[in-house]
Amino acid sequence: MSSLKKQSGSLHEKAGISPPEITNSAAIHQIQKNRRKQPSAAELINGILDQNRTALSRAITLVESTHPEHAEKANEVIQGCLPHANKSVRIGITGVPGVGKSTFIEAFGKFLTALGKNVAVLAVDPSSSLSHGSILGDKTRMEELVKDENAFIRPSASGDTLGGVARKTRESIILCEAAGFDTIIIETVGVGQSETAVHSMVDFFLLLKISGAGDELQGIKRGIMEMADAIVINKADGDNIKKAQQAKLEFNRALHLFPPKKSNWQPKVTTCSAITNEGISEIWDTISQYFVQTNASGFFQEKRKDQNQFWMMETIDEHLKSNFYNQPGIIGQLEQIKKAVQNDEISPFAAARFLLSEYKKQL
Image (cartoon, rainbow, N blue to C red; front, side, top):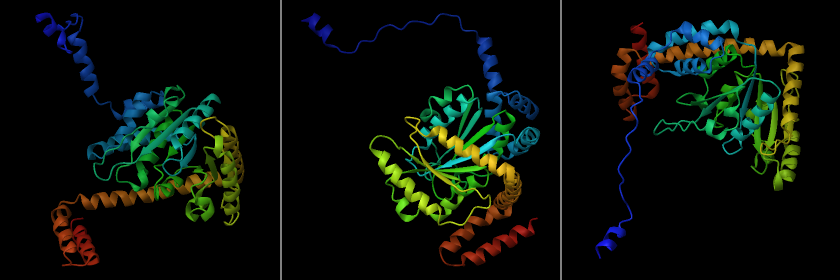
């Protein structure tokens, strides 16, 4: 009876095994010290120019930081990298969630690295409006590309910026270019107006679609169609091949309804399968044709100049807004004024004028 009782337990705790005493406490202390040590701006610049991925990652983190003390150091790093930038092609890729952006970018990125390209992917993950958290799962979804020594993937949280892309993404491009990446891919979150922001910082804008989504019957949304330099019907495999071909015809018809682009480039529509790699090389051929045409006409260089000017104005707007909300006098009155607006004690417009007037007094 006693032996049965001993055997009835399903869980048994065994004595643990003590680890051997080979741990060097001095080495642990040194590692912890190095982790806490923040590299100087000069060290980050030198690391980036030496194509050190750790330095690049730390510099991007510095750029993305909202801490006021980091802004000056980040600007110093960007200024040091600027003379070594602008030597890449910048490709924006957008599409609604579920269109297969990550799978496509991995297939496309692997194709480019096989050609000898150095590819940086700046992928923006949407932040929760409730928790403000972000999964940052692009490295998981692009598990093959992330292991490629000629590729660099940087997922970032969208935060409160328009669609997840703004000045910080623009500055990250400069850092990646200085680190030797000749092809920069920017993936948008694929919601709302993020496409407008991406379009203002890339050379080529690619719109991913899938067949059967209904957009081909609507002639798709006019704004995004006018921005696209190419439309790619993804997931053109298996039973979807015929549907994808039909969608291609519909999109081609819709494209011809729009006025010519300033670049004189006629947007192309093609199909592909990121799973089977069908059509990937044709997409790169289309992008290459675009760069040849726009470089020959001078449009490529003019567009870059216009974008630089646009981002100067955007940066001014951002700094003015940040300065306004961080003024002590504004901070002290804002919540009270907001409640007055909610209770219809003052109109939103009068409240805004009052706060702006108070802001001017503090300048």
